[in-house]
Image (tube, rainbow, N blue to C red; front, side, top):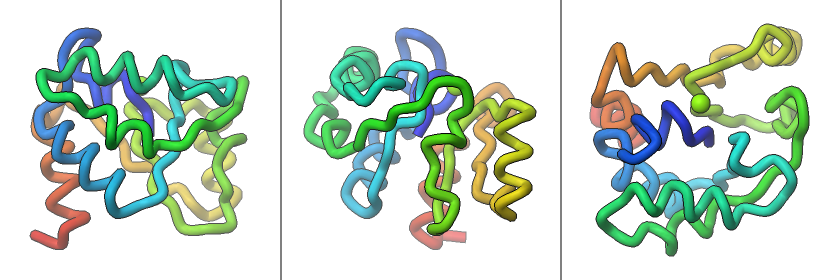
Length: 131
Ligand SMILES: [Mg+2]
């Protein structure tokens, strides 16, 4: 789970539907941070960074997200042998290549909040089979 451009629409505001999205994925899936706000295995800053943009205290759910450790490519932190969804607004060339090689390019859920302000709500609807 990326933060900037995904859970946060900008530095100070959650994306539309992000609170419900966070609660649902935390309660139903094994979720890992995949963000520059958590690169070295300590999730505390990521939790705080997202939560300070929320009116509601989301820490009980955000604390369920597990940390990852990676340096150059986020895909280094992904176990390509199991099914996964990667929510991110960016996918660098090398990361795209790594997904392609593993046959997992469709596991990247490209979030573009400028194109669709309500995309997290849509993603939640997809997960809840409302389509
Ligand atoms: Mg991002």
